[in-house]
Length: 210
Image (cartoon, rainbow, N blue to C red; front, side, top):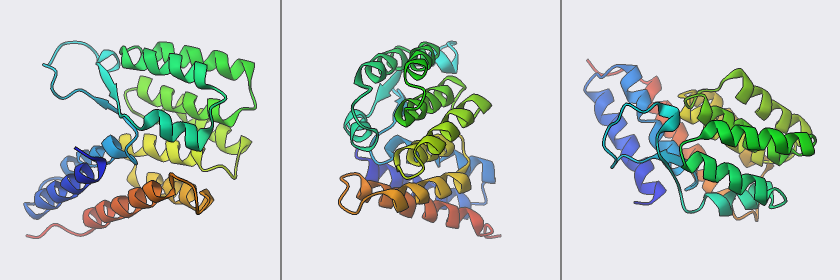
């Protein structure tokens, strides 16, 4: 199923729960569907797998097909080797190893915003999809190194959506959109993410009917 369809279904399901007076926390969970798309490029769990006692960090993950292409377009390809190794570790359910790989990459290139961005993403995944202090530091470093690049705020927004911090995610994606060249291949995807997230936030802001 395409990412647009997933996002539309998320909004529809969220609206239904809201109309039924469901708790805000429950409808917030549906925002995770935005991450499944996140412009068609995201990490996601495998819902077809049976439940198991493994930790969230060790669960199997899949990579959306467009992730590598999108990341290369918005962050560049100079770190392809480190990114591929980190990707493999995450896919194997070992995000801690991905973090280690990217820390070594940062040590080799401490002024490379793309590596810091990837490290922030890996930290967030490793920390149970939360914006931990380590993830926040890595993203902040990436933004400081390249304040005019759209990549860091885009992936920051992706991590924030996954953590359920929708307002902060919206601000990050709006910044990424503002920094994206008009002819960039990824600009339309970011525009769609902002539009869908606005719809979800607007729905959540309205009081549930009694």
